[in-house]
Image 1: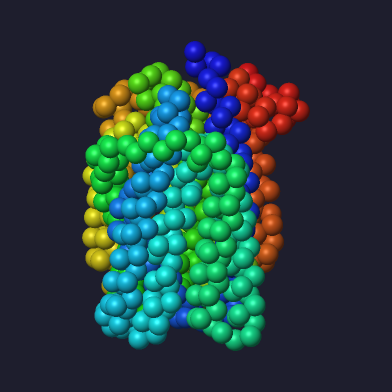
Image 2 (image 1 turned 90 degrees about the vertical axis):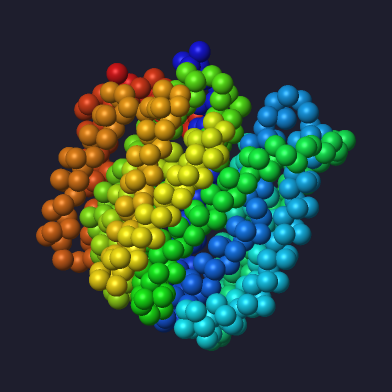
Amino acid sequence: MTDHDEGVSTLAKQGSITFVGNVVNGVLGFAIVMLMTRFVSPSVYGLFVLATSVILFMQVFANLGLPLAIDYFVPQYLDAGEHGKAKGVIVQVTATVLITSSLVAFALAASASVVGNFFQEPAMEVALLFLSVTIPMLAIYNVLLTSYYSIKKLQYRVVMRDLVRPIVRFSVTAGLLLVGYGLLGLIAGYVVGLFAAITVGAAIFTYKAWDLLTARLELVSPKPLVTYSLPLAMTSVVFVLMGHVDYFVLGFFLASDDVGIYRVGYMLGSGLMIIFNSLSPVFKPLIAETREDVELVQARFRTMARWIVGITLPIAIVVSLGASSYLAVLYTPQYAEASAVVALLALAFLFNVTFGGPDGSLLQGLGYSRIVFANTLVLFGANFLVSMALVPVLGIEGAAVGSATALFLVGTLTLAEIYYLDGIHPFTRDFAKIVAAGVPAAIAGAPIVLFLESDLLVVVALPVVVVGTYLLVLVGSDAFTEEDARMVGEFSPRLERWLPVG
């Protein structure tokens, strides 16, 4: 049964689409930050990071977690042929989040001065007034994203999220920074990019999902939606707060330029999530639709875990070893101060995403939303307490230790929970070969960092040596399986024939 799992093909096809999108989005995201760090000071960039962190935190309250119900219930209704109920879920969620998000936006705009005074940043009031309009926009944006997840048509999500939004944002931001608009240029680029993404995304979804949207509307009972979503709403509140608590703690204890430097380091370290973020949107619906078949769920989880760690591990080694050089070359030498932040977070994210990710996508797909909420409380609590204790002593490195501690802790919890609840685990001999190949790759890369004095040479040579060594060890240890070959075949039949399978 699991030897010819069609879900593996779906995971490969849709994962490859989202991977390409994530790469493009990541490149454009790095380009936007590079642009910002060259045209504005770390203090202005840090102020913008603080303001957007407040917005992203508030928008979680605004949408009540309801968009997360779309990619859980809609796949089930579609699988059962109940298109009217699938449409009902989307319509009910959209109407609800429009109302709640508008109320939250007004509340934030009214209290912008209070938030600015709390962080001792008067200019933050202006930033929040302009950015408050994005709260209902983000709610609709999230509805569109999860709607694409639910019908497993992620190529359209790629257009909206990974092409239109970053390209428009980069173009508008660059134009305004060139004429000297500073903070207002950063804000305008953020708002216009989001508006363009929603407009294009809504148009494409209407066209491509016309059969679903023209089905006879059947409203569903709100109770299952709320029962599933409320724990995840609280999870999202804590999860988003966890993702931004570092900035809040740093902004409270340190200056805004420290926030800007830490943000750059965090962005580079969390870049390790690119593979997980490519597979996770389709992985959750695949688990949800077969959650009663434990054997199939475990097979899909093991496939995902091997591919995530297999691709992410060499990237983590490169980023950790060459953090200082990459920060200096991609941004400016003053941001090399965050090299320890990058190394800590890269290792922590590698561990966490391998076993389900910080948002618990496997547990969500299995329906354990309350456990996800509990895990997220642990994630936030550990991060907040450790950061509060260490930031006054260690500065930005203290915030990194807090995040790393939380990510390691929750990754371990997730492993224990899925094994206790369903007897599922990812550990096999094939998985061990993938992990073990990282040791000689790291040993081979260390001399590049130690003996090359030029940051540019390190940036160019390090990935070649590490990835090359990693691939040679995988081939030498006979690490590739028949399932790997089928996965690769979804990308390229020629590459499938080349892949050495033991």
